[in-house]
Length: 386
Ligand code: GAF
Image (cartoon, rainbow, N blue to C red; front, side):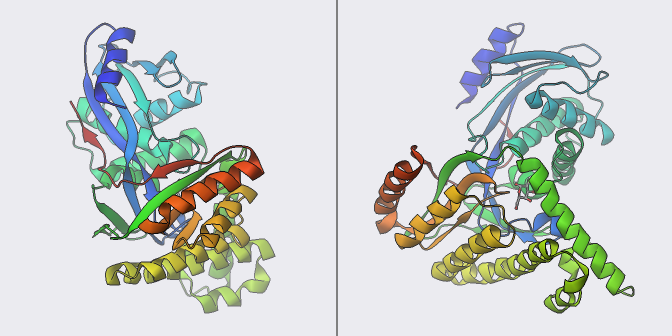
């Protein structure tokens, strides 16, 4: 996907004029899954796939003329009206409202956009849209005064208020702050982060897309978050003198102390979150030492936890994980929210071809389709292209 492609559609579908062009990426996450809304650490990086949008002020008070190039769908709507029915248009409507709250006097504009982040693959195509539109609105109407962090929060608020997913901040953060060649360790409580150069010599990072998309993924995601909040409430009741905002404030002894006060299911979810918090820190150490074998072992442990304790895996993802193990892949796990999407695999270069061939063959034999393969290239965050 390139800028000329988007530009040609923008010219064709509107009044022949060009506008400004913005890009934002999707993301991978090395480790730290479902930790962001629990105040923990995550380890994402932006990818070289994303959304490109061309935007131009159209002189109306609040009419948005929007064209989704990928869906070939054109929609005009007003910001003073109810949110549009089309789900893709809600991202535009929502981010306009959230940027407005941050003091950006959004008026009418034309927009055409396209993307090459695979949908439903867990690479966060929605955060790429939110970040891209936020970046464009900030530039067109806001004198670029909204800070990158506030754009992250505006994207997250769009998910909460207009899409119905109570997500954390990892995806929007990665999309805004990504840097080519670097992954980032973010502390989601303090919002401090560090760039880590990521160049595992002798290894490749590859995604295998199960092509499964769970129908009820957003409500199941919200349920997981609710379980964590239930445990936090139980902790606050048990230890009135202490402050529990998220599971980040709890240690293993605390969790054991409320085991009988919470449901078995909620306990299991929290048990995963505390384990994952430990794993992200161990993973950072391993990365600093260049110990990719240890990093890979932690990825497998995360898969196990996501599958058995957090229960966000599915048969197909577990199968891909097993194939990775059988092929001697260093690390493999579900990436992103789960309920379908991709596994992320850290594989030695000399095992790569055999692993991919075997995964394609066995997956096709069992499920009648070949998993898509995406080699990960760590790219840049949100930016203006023209
Ligand atoms: C989704 C959410 F959007 C993120 O905030 C994060 O919770 C992730 O699932 C799981 O780690 O991508």
